[in-house]
Length: 117
Image (cartoon, rainbow, N blue to C red):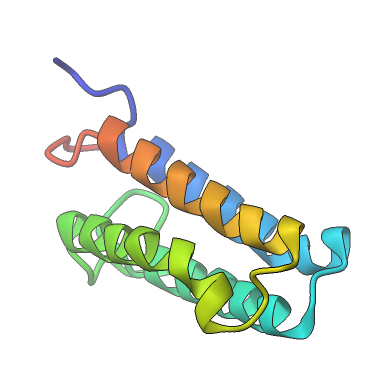
């Protein structure tokens, strides 16, 4: 089965997700620990995207598959972070972590990691 997300589209999703994650604390009035997490995630996602070997990068230094592996690691950690960082009772912040994890896994599953773009 051919996967519908090309490296170029994956990059678009990455940068869009970074922007949404960066905006989330202000839009949803998140508590300080969640705000710090989302700022860190946005900066990290943007940095990794800028250096991934795909069409929308600034410098192609990180292999595309390594980029995907890093995303999956973050997706595995995200559901636990509201408890680890102490904001699990804040429903919106907690659910944003769950949603981001689900989005990350879904995009990874639909990305053609072997495509030349």
